Length: 264
Image 1 (cartoon, rainbow, N blue to C red):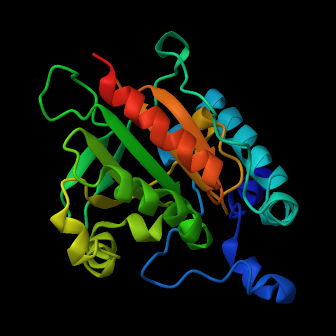
Image 2: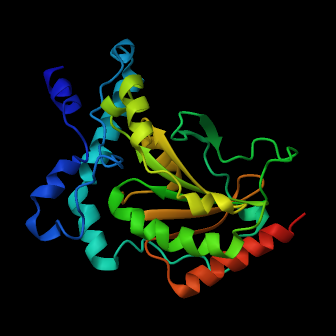
């Protein structure tokens, strides 16, 4: 039991260790308060689950997984490929082979909540034909996200059938507490005034809580890079990319989005 308590006391993926890496500070700066998605959670097993053998084994497996995959591994990968986990799709993924994007909850800066992707009922008129989800788990990935979202806005800025969401994930147990969460949302980054003039807006939202199994489902391991997913009106993944956008990848993204707009 003592050994198990010690395991539970370990805070996985402690981001504060990054700031101690002298050679990496410029490449991976510590995230400022306005984007605290770097603050990961210190997890505690629910007291009601302490007698549940299955829950304990599941938590042990998770702790082992997270401790085996730490920030040094993430940084090492970033040195190798600069966040380009994989090359983006060159062509659109066929609808029959496309996987559903897992549902998650997020908040706008005014506190309003929503579920993403917006595709729970394809018959609704407000469901977009194409949705670009830009996922960020650390502030170091924001320039990567911008390399995709800005050209995407320029290409489809006046389309009512396209949505763009930039999602910052915040795992910290402390920051998910209601009073602190409300305070953080008030000071978070908001869309620029000129972006609100277009039909397609840069919708900036924040998702609070434990996203471990969400990441596992999407096979997201490195939290220092950005992840880009293009979804159809049914919430299926039809294209994906990561890291900084290249010109060829942007051309592919815009082409695949145009194809989704033509689908019936």
